[in-house]
Length: 100
Image 1 (cartoon, rainbow, N blue to C red):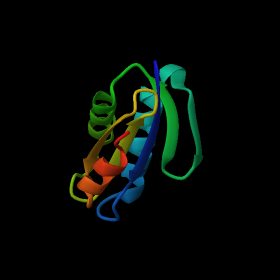
Image 2: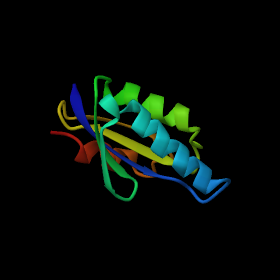
Image 3: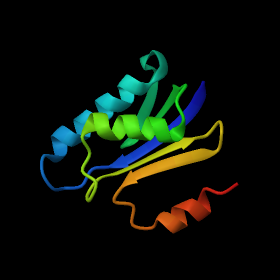
């Protein structure tokens, strides 16, 4: 089991509220025993047995996020790995900052 932080941003196009709620439900559904910490906006802490990539894929596709406007970042703080999907404007900066 690993600890993950998850951050997301839903773009303003289409049904913003519906996509926001669907990503929240997808994250809650992926959390071990349904346990989450979500006291700040668009930020969760959960535990999961999945890898960062597998968890990102599961949340992204379950929530029906839109690649050109939405963003999802999943960081495995236990293994010091991450995965991101969506409209990441500065992927090289993110990658450089995530290196140990």
